[in-house]
Length: 308
Ligand code: 8YV
Image 1 (cartoon, rainbow, N blue to C red):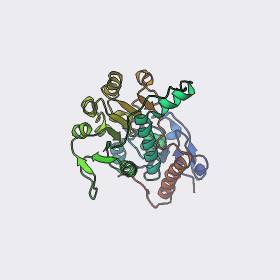
Image 2: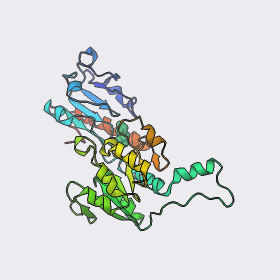
Image 3: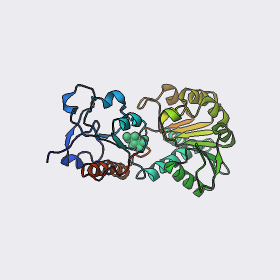
Image 4: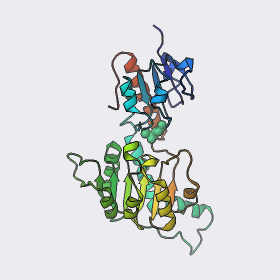
């Protein structure tokens, strides 16, 4: 039997060792008319490369898009479904890793850990001269925007840190005892820290608007481990510049890997290069799940983790 042809536009852990049972094409340039793509039956997709109607039309034989990552906002799932193409992602295997990172970012942003480290490394720590005191997390309230799998894992950790936790979702989560807010602006004005853990995509674009940031206020901190465009990045930058927001911890940006120069200049923001799930074993598990989905599909058992 001939090997199924899969496209791997960008390598990821396991993509080399587990791809041997397939005929693989490594091609970043997904365009119609590329003859080598005409018989591609699946795409193993890492990164944020957009797959919309136009890209899909280059693959008349496509059956499956196996996405590396839990977020699949870069793929037009409606357009794929209309063509009978199944889209899968890698949920669960990265939940705790991303939640750990969110906690690190939150504590780093509020307690100013990177700034304190820079202070020490630059030789400013001297007898009689310590690092300026940071705000405390004790007694503070954290609001989670998006209490899905990752949001819940963040909430569990925050509760373990004895913090007050509330959340805002499209609808209340059944069986959840945390205080629910239907209105994001109201929640933002009631909390000290807002953690963004929603899916990306058009429905959540700029959900954290200038008004939400203003409601979080001059004593507030914003943490984003979701997608850059869930937050109005310009409004956030202005608020941080003018003291209308105390601090931010950001793992994601609108135009990755480009980080606005204005953010790089600020001392009250902790910036990470989208490393939420970026730990060796977790990335390995994600890669395995990408191929588990492919194997299951081509062995006729269907997708394991379809997004819908
Ligand atoms: C991915 C992510 O690892 O899972 C997601 O949705 O944002 C990341 O953790 C990254 O997008 C790799 O493609």
